[in-house]
Length: 81
Ligand SMILES: [Zn+2]
Image (cartoon, rainbow, N blue to C red; front, side, top):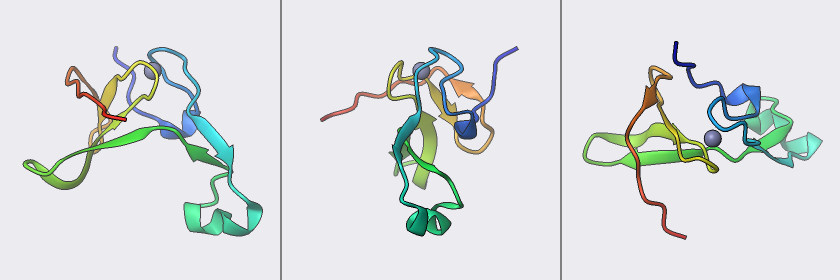
C-alpha cells in the first residue's frame, strides 16, 4: 500500500530524506502552528488547475503528493533555481 503524505513525519517515506529545515525561533512559532522547524517540502502550484498549492514535493527525490488527498502522484515537474 502506498504511504500517504505526512509532513509532520519530518522525513520522506520514499527516499528517507530529511524534511526538517532550520529551527523556528520560539517567539515566532505560534505563527507556524507551533511547529519547531521550518519545512523543506516544496509546494507545487498549477494555476490552470487550482489557485494555490496543489501538490507537495520532496526536495530530495521529487516525489509528489496530492495536497488534498495526500496520495502519491506520478506527476513530475521541473524546478528552476
Ligand atoms: Zn524523497
